[in-house]
Image (cartoon, rainbow, N blue to C red; front, side, top):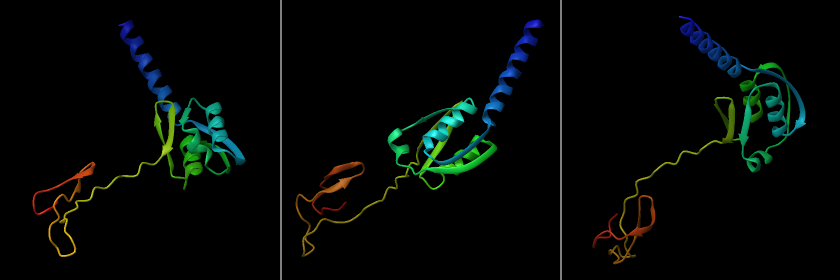
Length: 142
């Protein structure tokens, strides 16, 4: 019975700590600061650790803002707005990176012909995912 009570108590404490860290509030006042400095201030006032590519972050402009007792997500949303960067929260780690551009595939159909619309022998067309290309029969259709 005591063991069960102890395990329940530890579980509730763990849940409480997790909820607290996800709703961490910070107060930051910056004027023409680098985003890296904002990250350092957030790290000092919370349990979060930042992971980012220094080269990507160094290309950003300077940040000016006054954030008083606001959630970390609000600060990050304001600082990263319009930069093409976004963040992910994984446990107590904030990963900052460029937004992935979704690649769209296009189905390409046609024939390899000369000026007189005669199929060319040895004409190549690219296969899906392969830029070397491949001939497709005597009609050169792809």
